Length: 137
Length: 384
Ligand SMILES: [Zn+2]
Image 1: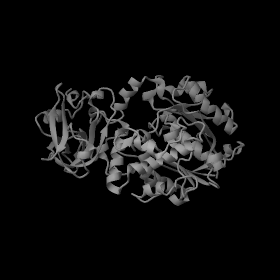
Image 2: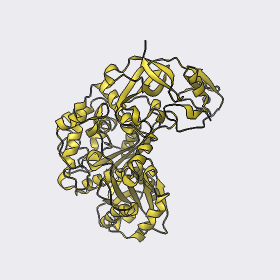
Image 3: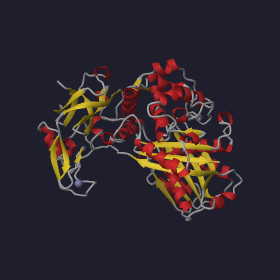
């Protein structure tokens, strides 16, 4: 249990990586690193597909990164209808990529590929734990 | 050519907005057309492969049901799924069954009745078409993922919304000629450019429509093909590849690496180059998908796909005609049936039976069929 607290609406309750949500709640983004071969994974994984080890360590990700691509979505699946329009984006941090939403109030006109962004953890009004991208200050 | 595998029958239902019949009846429409085309009866078939995306099916395990309705008991049947590329994955499976000598003739039936479930259910499933742990919690849609690829292509190469609109203009031109297409109206530049954003920079007319439909492809060994009266179309090259389900696992968004890899395999197997292809069907679920396909298939250098459509090189009279049946943009996209419909168009071209959209003298054709946003990619090269 624990993973159901992740994001605007979670579809998964159980994962061996649920500690990610606790780290996020405390304000940090974590990836996993294989204790045997050193590969770093984001999204975090419980198992290494390279060396088959499950000895994973949590490693903190520097929250300063660069925007890679983005879109402003005017339609949404069930559970997200009241949020539209919202900006979805991919950004790169320390050689890993992260997918998420951009902070409310920004449109595609405010954004460009390569711009510096910060990844900010946030607690939603209903208590869900998530993160969003913001322009780096 | 004792080891070779041929396509000896093709069929497709009309692609429509709300099919007034059951999935078994829908599947039968394409099956009947393909069997009559091949001149076969059910005893000639050794197996059936049924392709659909199960999230739209109310029927659990539809393959057994469809096989019964087609009269294909006691022959083996099973389901193959790779979402939008299900029926070309089915075709590859049928190829392997025949090439191995296990079977002589196999029917690949693709179907989707997307109107089988309510639009609320469809909206609910849409959000789970992404990695449900790490991406769905943000509210994802298929247009949003392709839109991020479009944005990356714009940023990397200077492609524009107008370039994408040109692809829809072409699709609409040929869609009007396709009796089985769901969208058959003409579309001019202004109307496309003025349409509302679905997920920027993709607008309404950059997106294909959902549809109900079915397709059927009959594959046979060379020996079996001799018994059929139709001109066999040979499978010369097959390529398949995958890429990460999570969008964050990709190295680039200005193209689909899985499509590039599938194309490389298919060209190598066929001992061919992109310039050997006379006519192609590519997976244009969105206009940007067709543009990326030009580059991923080697019809244009990376970043130069827009020049092909600007110069009308992918029109019927151009250097490499692409989607001259209207593509998914005009035909509609009944997930499990789509790849089979693409194969049907190429088979008709290579037989010289494509009517108003016939590419004169077409000898070699290619199908590019993508599942998800390049999670799955199949490329098939066929020759007459
Ligand atoms: Zn490892």
